[in-house]
Length: 154
Image (cartoon, rainbow, N blue to C red; front, side):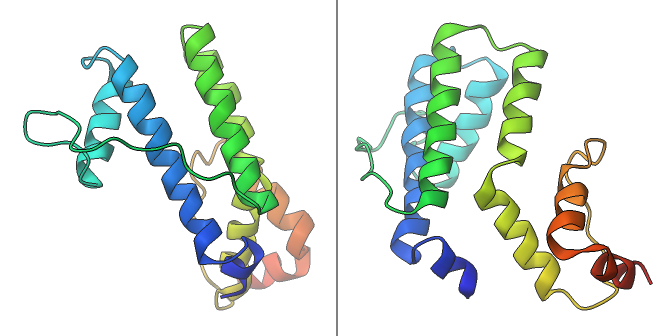
């Protein structure tokens, strides 16, 4: 698929997962296990097989290799921003909204959305997460053009 090539191949795409797991472990170890963030991280770490039944780490997770691809590097930079934010401030609704907006505008995410729209049959239906913000709709209108979107509506 051209999208994997755009992200630098499978090895680079795998780095996205590796960095997410590494930061997930880092954040999970620091948080009170009763917070919503820690509970979500616990579920994620169980699903990738890193926590045992007693919620202990089965193995150490090493810091992943730095990404070479710009899209992957952008995502890792975003995770670093989240990491620094968690260290400096108490996350409130406003902080989460700002980070959410930043995530939605990442080029790698927009490329994935573009690939999905372009590969869909005419008349396909897309549901945008957090539909109230309209970020994907606005970008798709600019990237693909209004003609394609009108065809999709019919």
